[in-house]
Length: 181
Image (cartoon, rainbow, N blue to C red; front, side, top):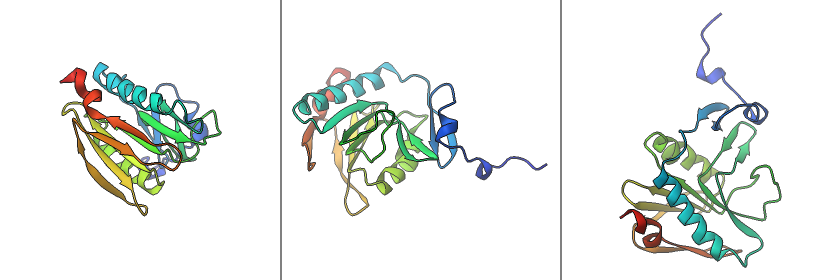
């Protein structure tokens, strides 16, 4: 019997649901989530969620969520740090591309967030992808145009308005990062 190779691994959502701990599944390959996020990571996510949630208070079609499963395919399940979703009907997990995905970068997940998830979110037509860098107190924003992410800029003290057909929101990065300066 030969050695098990990475390409021989092909787990699915039903396998994923049986696992203990926190995982993501990319093309059938299980990837352990980092230990519980550091306080700064959680604080930044909370600031972003609070800003977005207040703005979406009157928009009943859209909501902001933290750490929810996004079932891209039966063999790919991601758990973004923050998402804005619109017209999602499933209560168990996300079934369609979020309008906005925010990933807060840690050293252990940087490659996954900057490369693998970047490519998946781009292909799935996520409208905006935001990478937050806690150590630098900065953010990179990408907008999906014609199935390709186009960098909108680097943000530290600026605001950015996300234009959305259903509900427009804005993130003030000065407020997001203020506590940590």
